[in-house]
Length: 476
Ligand code: GLU
Image 1 (cartoon, rainbow, N blue to C red):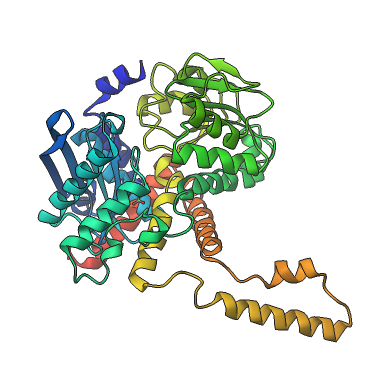
Image 2 (cartoon, helix red, strand yellow; image 1 turned 90 degrees about the vertical axis):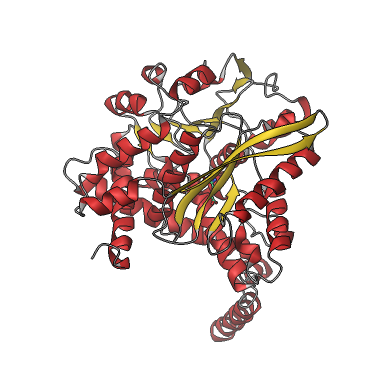
């Protein structure tokens, strides 16, 4: 049913984003010309190219859309999915602009899409598809560390990013900053520690921050904090798995996990690592020991729970199932998982929706850190770690000699430790997610007429993008 629904909604996703924009733009005091400039996609590139497969030549359809050039480079992932179409890529590119603005990542928004099911192709064929796609982007100046910087998205990961950076570097041998042409790379190719789990960790930080406001939690009928909250996660890909893992480690109870083959439910809680290992071995979640099989993903979405995290694709909560959703909070880890029609129903029911353009911005935030690392050609922490450790050691020794008391060996180890790259990435991400949440919550609570967090997030984003256009002097 979900895929039939997706077909019906094709060509509507960008219109949905425009509607969100219009709804929020009313609260942004800026000239109409600037607002018009923001909402449309600046450049849309559609490519068809052939690749040789074991069954002969196949024509591949692909896209790259740059939504806004108010800041450069533009930024956004490349989706590998048979559902890719121009409207979807445009919508996702626009969401990237707003996402970057909300978390103060100084990039415009972009998105790519390759219309294939990666499962239909061998590794060699995938490499050919990705490298040829990259050369097509190079031909038209749609990629480069100062131009447009892709990243992973649904259906792509570190492997594809490694092929992209290699192809780009081959064509641009004198580009000193070539590693910054794409993010989400393996560490050995210029990637950064913490990028893989960044989106999931950002989702966790965002929901945790929402729940840290005791007065808000009370309104949703919840106690503050993550501990003991019941959570349902749809999607066990990179985003879903890491989200589930961070909630589990934070003391929440993951009562259901869903994938396209079905879902599993255990009111006592599921360990995401054990489920992932089981799924890798058995090629399905179903039959996981101790859990009950649910017939479909849809059934998992409708379970009674505190927090529902759709972490797969768009349009998962729609006009037909919205009335059955029983969660108190929906955390949009995917892009566009709730349709506008469903949102009306959910808001009426008092469900708090933490929107994608804020909540899943952890990925692009750490992509920004990776790009900064590539521009500076040095690993974060390399210049400071040892220095901090030595300073901490001297400080502890001074305290010991002044007080005549000794710290334990464990205290020395814990308190002297200098920050690794991953520590800095986590702390930068935590700061970003908390700070951005406060900004959008403040708009929600203090702007008359703004009644939901998505509109507040759009207001926040549009204001920031508009100001940068204004400052560029494009509209004197
Ligand atoms: N594809 C991810 C997103 O939708 C990450 C984008 C990036 O890191 O540039 O936010």
